[in-house]
Length: 239
Length: 92
Image (cartoon, rainbow over all chains, first blue to last red; front, side, top):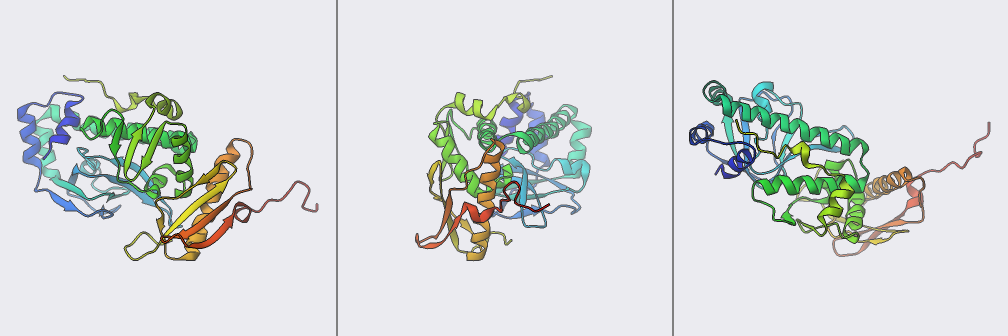
């Protein structure tokens, strides 16, 4: 059940059997969440964090004019709102974009992990730092990258992140998002995303169709995106 | 703007401009023709804003809005989406 979470942790560090058990002990029973359900609203007081076992989730904020900005995507294995353990409330909402399976982790059990499993606690500290790194990369995309470059960048990032948890092969992966979702990630309109996808397809870089991303030319895609995976801290750094 | 729901119809936004034709295979759930029109205008502005970053804009384009049966709802020309004041067009 937490295999993807363990794959993600073990991509960068060692997780002992003892630590693995501590993670399992911290989790409550999994809950299924329907697509398009907002599971956490900004400001609400939280006593659990959410581990994403299956599916895609996002963090987002809505503007008064009805526009939505998705500020990060979460894939299976991510500890979506580990942030709320220290923040106690979130400044943004969290929504399931596809049907999801989640496991709540009560904050008092996370406290116990910080007290009894210092190395695991540092791994979770790393995890929130990684979220910050991803946010910085999205800032660069939203503020500076062209439409085609930031669209390409999102496909590159998700290829790496889904690959880490066994959900992408060399050149393709499932991505059950709409063009509206992509637009809300990138600060574009769906019309513009559609036009941009055509560009990427005609250049042979990547095709996104019917919930599947197929990368035709990885070198070209990464060049268009100016994608440098260093911000995903993929190197192993076990202690 | 309304968010997506099970009860809203799908509208498709097919783009014709200087770079050719871009079919919309996916569509968007919207409350009705008025919101579809607004969505087309916002889409055109988003396309043109990107183009302008490159130093020029091509207003010779249009979006054809269709319903899920392929029936034409309306056509929105790029020119309808922006008001252009040529240099010197305002009296001093």
